Amino acid sequence: MADRGDAANPLSLLGHYCLPMRTHVVDHPLVAHKLTVLRDIDTDSPTFRSLADELVTLLAYEATRDVRVEPVDIVTPVSPTTGTKLASPRPLVVPILRAGLGMLDGMMRLLPTAEVGFLGMIRNEETLEASTYAERLPEDLSGRQCYVLDPMLATGGTLAAAIKFLTDRGADHITAICLLAAPEGCARLEKDLEGLDVPVTIVTAAMDEKLNDKGYIVPGLGDAGDRLYGVV
Ligand code: URA
Image (cartoon, rainbow, N blue to C red; front, side, top):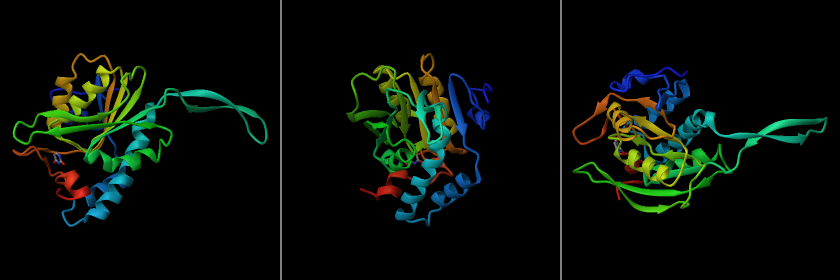
């Protein structure tokens, strides 16, 4: 599970973990089924929202394999025993506005005691560069595990900027959950996050073929925000 991938060729990461950034493509028939319906141009917004929600919960199950836990002593109706509970501080879930909001409920279903912070990032459609337009996060994220929700890892600019924002505040463990990823975005993350002394893992339902000249993932699923919330 700890195979080192070829950073110059993100497709080599399929099904592998890679250090320092690890990419994990979740290989499960239910994930593939739900993703196929999401991709379909004929899937309407209500169905898209509910399937995205279900898909995130499946991805979250894989993404939380490294969640920090601690032992706890409890008493069952039969005997005392030692169990496991989530460690403190609690994990922080960070949806990137706006499309990441469509992933929040699916994530919180598995981590109901997590805290939620918000990060508004916008991509300039000409330069494709990302900038922060809103944030509601603790000033000090020291020792925090963060789960970033961003449906489309396309150019990688938004996610790289978000991860840097969180690690600049002290976050020491980052997992990004993306419905889809493109090789170009993974390569950009590898480059932008080079030297970062924080483990970063990307968990996604599929590594698609490429980006088109407008920065959309191919074959992709279109504009995730528009499909979740309409063109506003
Ligand atoms: N953002 C989207 O919503 N879709 C893409 O394909 C790329 C970026």
